[in-house]
Length: 387
Image (cartoon, rainbow, N blue to C red; front, side):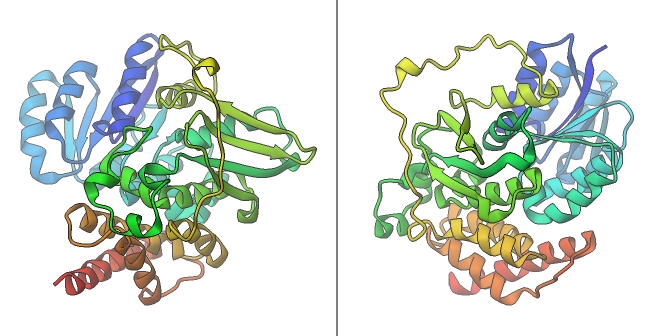
């Protein structure tokens, strides 16, 4: 009997690679729910290939296209954020792969945890925005989270069989992005086209820009704090341009364990879907002889000030990270559209932090209100400054 999977964000980079893995193991996995943001054409194509019970499009304006294409094939359809959240309570899947972009992953993940689903977490913003809430919900649910992000999957794998009390430090690796060797002045003036040229990974535009600012690494530090229960002062980032060491764990006896692999997301996806078991791969594996050297260097927080936001968010707590995430979503979109400069992304985030009210112990409703308030404020602020 196949293990039934819901793929949220099925048309994105992680979603399409998840469906690759499902196709490679048809006797083991079945995609029973597919959900996408607005790419209705790709969603229809995926649904006709994988024959899920349900296909959901978040953009309600595209619903008629989805319904008309799939109704003749007996595939149920739905639209909107609420429909996606409701789908997480369906009894016809066991694991939810949360691969949506940004804040949109929070509410479906909350509903999936309350429904007792296993979570293959690729949407780091869920733990960035509401890590304390998610941790509390997991403590009250049979749900488990297995991370899909390559860095957190690496840490997860390094911790298998280890006593958590012996962990000294988590070390998250970063490629350094396209601007690792640029000066701070050159980086500040970088264009969107330059920022989108990631040297190692092929990802969506939003996460590629987050990698270029290194806010993605700040988010990964926050996510690691909640996933693994390690205090923020014992989590650090190191630049590793080759992207072969995906992350490391240092132990109290001085030993350091690392997970190595080629820059390819299929491995952590297979590991998560297989419930931390090692599924065979037809792809070529890592050959260390192909690499003359593996190098590591400290990240430049002057050139990449967004990296410092991890400490701020974890030290201050409350809804701070929620504000950072929401402001960043608006700022990245503005940068991609040419309305602000690259260094304007950081300024937009710190501006929002100084204007959005702080909530010390936020509820789910507080997170929702904070997100929408920050989106509105940042849109207004950038609109005023770009004219």
